Amino acid sequence: MHITVSEEVASDYLADVGDILNNKDFLRLSDYTHHQWTNRLMHSINVSYLSWLIAGKLGCDRRSAARAGLLHDFCLYDFAGGTPTGEHQAFYHPKAAVKTSLQYFVISQKEQDAILAHMFPLGPLPNSREAWIITLADKLCASVELCRIPIALSRHNRVVVA
Image 1 (tube, rainbow, N blue to C red):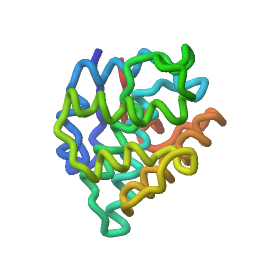
Image 2 (cartoon, rainbow, N blue to C red):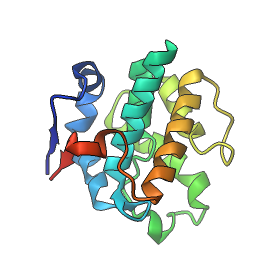
Image 3 (cartoon, rainbow, N blue to C red):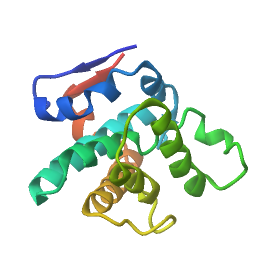
């Protein structure tokens, strides 16, 4: 499996997240359906890119926003099958995503906190502007994906997972 990225995607964004996008285990997220018609990998890429764009416009840390956005659902199990602990998915998966992310990548405390808070108000209150951005981008992408409308990098085949 590999990702094809069009020239329209900012090279600065790819520099910030390239190590994650080239990780074979991270790419396994494409195996999991997400929001009915997309997969978790494409959802995460969309949240990441949208977060990176918003963070740039607001003068926030684009790198942290992009990386936390990309890793916010990095859980290598099928959400439809329930959680390993029986805890509700909304509460369990942010903690699992941080744990999995730390096993594969070096991520900052800001990125960890943003991942943990992305399900607000079902999770902790976001404690940084980047965490608020990821929370917003996740909700926006999820809403649009549920309506089967391509958003961010899934539009016009800017990113293709094959």
